[in-house]
Image 1 (cartoon, rainbow, N blue to C red):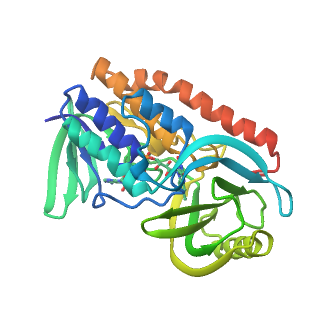
Image 2: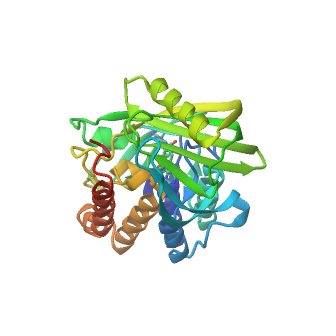
Length: 344
Ligand SMILES: Cc1cc2nc3c(=O)[nH]c(=O)nc-3n(C[C@H](O)[C@H](O)[C@H](O)COP(=O)(O)OP(=O)(O)OC[C@H]3O[C@@H](n4cnc5c(N)ncnc54)[C@H](O)[C@@H]3O)c2cc1C
């Protein structure tokens, strides 16, 4: 039997698996996709996330994981069409998520965690002193048992939906297009546009150049069920007219579903009994889609609590993660004060 079974090999799950395996706990990390796995993302590792990596002894994001420009100097926020941007300095790194996340998963494996990829959690049952999980693998179904189960299985978390089956989640759609081409905006910034014509929340543009070529990444989002192409087309046209975007070829496009994390009705959920939720599964999300630092921080919080004792983990975890929740709340409130029309 495992001490801890973790579902999801994103930053939250891999960080937790590494920390627990370092302390000689018997850990299983399961991931439904084949590793290294692609993750739709702008791929910006914030100074907050870098600080956690350094503090936890993993070290800064290695250069070999970075694309060009390696250093991202911050965010430029365009409050409305035609208005100049406001600059916020940050000291981030620019990566491909598949490489970054796999780097962390490899750290977990090196620490001694068992990793099963192409293995999907189907359901679980809580028994007296253990949790039995049913897993679907490419070789058939299998059952594993652990004392603690941790859902690090993203914003669409199955574990969260099983634990809180009556929860009403408001879903949004996120769309991202990757272009070969040029644009007259500083590639060392993430460019964030708040105009309602371009998205229901915020539209993003950033640039990455690596061995796979140069990508201009254009991103927008809206409530699920609304016509996202209208927002996307208006945003792309505006980038062409106002910022000299010259798209030579659409290389690929993708979409995903995500909870409306910043809705006032959306609550953090940290689990039930011996089942914990960390990262996006718990609803932890920073302003402008920065989700990696809360994922890493909540993983560290959960590991601190589990390493103290595997009994009654939930109440101690809820207390431990409170400072993170407070700082995320302050971030959203500050943003709304600066841009009162945002999210109205
Ligand atoms: C378009 C976009 C751009 C973003 N850009 C940034 C950015 O630049 N910087 C930043 O910090 N954040 C960004 N984010 C947010 C960031 O990607 C997430 O907040 C972060 O990945 C959360 O980490 P996590 O470990 O909680 O979950 P994830 O990284 O989502 O990992 C969860 C893992 O669980 C697996 N999984 C799910 N269900 C199961 C199951 N049933 N069985 C087995 N495995 C399962 C998934 O396959 C996945 O690999 C962005 C998000 C979006 C949508």
